[in-house]
Length: 142
Image (cartoon, rainbow, N blue to C red; front, side, top):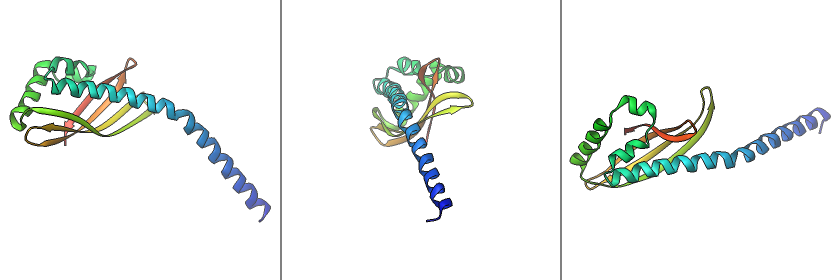
């Protein structure tokens, strides 16, 4: 093996090791943030199932509150139940948490299913941190 090739391979190995150590250090942080986001999502979903709409609305963030009032939120969820039947369960299908530098914040995207009496309805959720707390930023029916 040529000397140049040998140094190149050692350099690539060193670069790979540095990247691996960086990922290993971030894993507990990302896992912790994903767990906290999941807890907020679970609380939101449990509140909807229990028809505690004000409590579910409390899991939502400042921008969500500015976009939709509690009364509109209640009407929206009651409308879904009149169309599909009573909401029986909210379940998470996927969860993806990431950290961005600009703007500097943690965000989580969750694909979820709302199981009503008549059908299952898929939703996409966006959660983020506001003042160190996870909140529902928005969601939409798919």
